[in-house]
Image 1 (tube, rainbow, N blue to C red):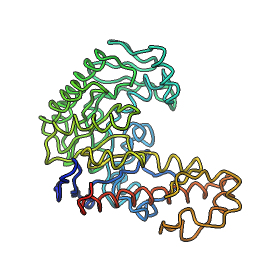
Image 2: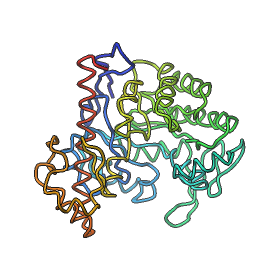
Image 3: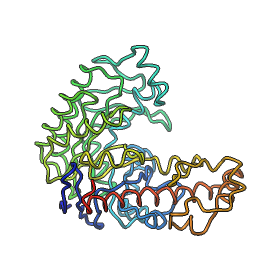
Image 4: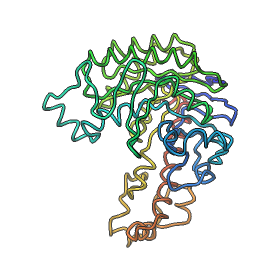
Length: 380
């Protein structure tokens, strides 16, 4: 992999660049749509390409569960397996340490989390989730499919990712929960940093390997993690964990990390990408970022437009014989109307979700494309 910075902003930490991989070039900054199980839900790979998507990220943990990395490897790697000709990333499985652990214990919903925080609930040092065990060597999971015991550590994560065969892979880490106290996060970082070293040593493939910076909401731990991971010989860096609900604070937190990382290497922000976040995270120095928002919302009937979010499940749209967004030139806006999409959703037809997924991805990618143009023009 080769990364080149083409232009740096004089007004922010934003920058233009490109990532060159075996499967093509990615213009940055760039949204990375999520293809959890080697598919962007409801779309085939050719359609995803037509939404201007340049690179996708798949989930190592879920592909390990089904169909298994051996199946993907036997098919010739994930690109051939899913017929995707452009670049691909796989995460490390570290996010599942949170989502299947304390994330499940306390509930992932923001309202539930807020309630827990208001009641003073916190995760103390040495605490363990109910359904997994986190040790210095790795994490013992229960399969959400059949309950089998699974162990994934840094060695296992890298070997799985090597067999899957994405262009860019990530080191195994512990993604700590927002409720974790300072001492818990500090101890967690010791594991994440140790695992990062093991990942570098164990990797045998030519894939680009990114190290992941953690540290939760604690400035000194974020900076420490960025310094430690940034000093290692990674090809790029992921920024993971919690960034809170305060948008301004999120920009500051990303800035803490970016200031300590090697400038010439790419930075990927894990799991953040609402429309209202994009300009902020790009101005804060992120080159790529993945998010399920455009696809997740589409499957629930929500279209993103220049007029805001539209819930196409609402009956009023049966009387709207007009495109989703008059300014959008995507295939859906050129060929289908709100009344038809509303009908499909109300009738329970999968095609309604498919059309909204296509439009939302196109709309998000066009939105980021315009931010790149703003950087070119010196506006941000």
